[in-house]
Length: 258
Image (cartoon, rainbow, N blue to C red):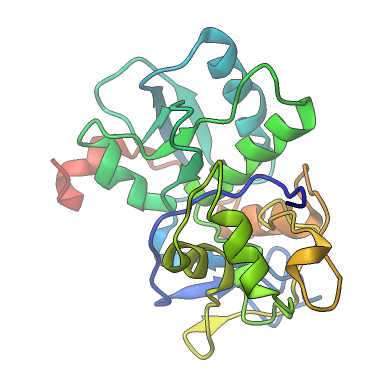
C-alpha cells in the first residue's frame, strides 16, 4: 500500500450555505480568486472567545494543541482559551483508536455541551514528526472554525482511482467502508448551492494523496502550514473590525443547547 498523509473524518455536512473565498478581505468577486470551501452558517461570531477543554490526554499532547492551534488566531479575529470549565465550546479527546476528526464550526456545541468530544486527536503522539503534528492540529482546527476539505470543492479536478482508494482506506488505521470513503474523499459540494472559485493545492485543508490514488498519476502535496488562501479565509470570515461578542458557551441556552 502506498504512503499517504493523515486522513480525518470531519463529520456529516450539508451543502446548504457553503461558500468559498475568492477575495481576501472582501466578498466573492472583489479580487483575485483564492479558493477555500467553507460552511458560512456554521461560523462562530467574529470577535468571540472559544473555550477549549480536554477530556483526556497527556500534558505533552495538550501542549502541542496550545502551541499550534492559535496560529489561526493570527489571521482570524477569534480567541482560543484553554480552560478547565464545564462550559466549553470545543472539547478535545486523544483516543488513539478513533483517529483524527472534528465537527464543523458551531456543530461542536452539540457535542461539547453534552460533555462529548467535538474533536479527536488520536494520532498526536511523540512518535510523530513535528510537521505531522503541526498539520494535524491546524487541519482539525480549520474544521472547528468552519472550513471543509479542499478536495471537496466543486472546482477540484482530481481524477480518482476509486478502487485503489477504497482498498487502501478499508485497512488500518481507518477501516472505512465505501460510504465513509465516498463522504470524506469523493463527495463534492455542488453548484449552485456552493459558491467556489479556484482550487487551492497548498491549503492545509487538503489531504496528501499519493499518485496511485489518481488515474493520471498526479498526487497532492503534503501541506503542513497555512496557505495564503487559508489565511485569507480566516481574515474574511472572522474580520478584525468585528465587535468582541464574548464567550460562546455563555449563550448556549439561547441557541437551544443544554
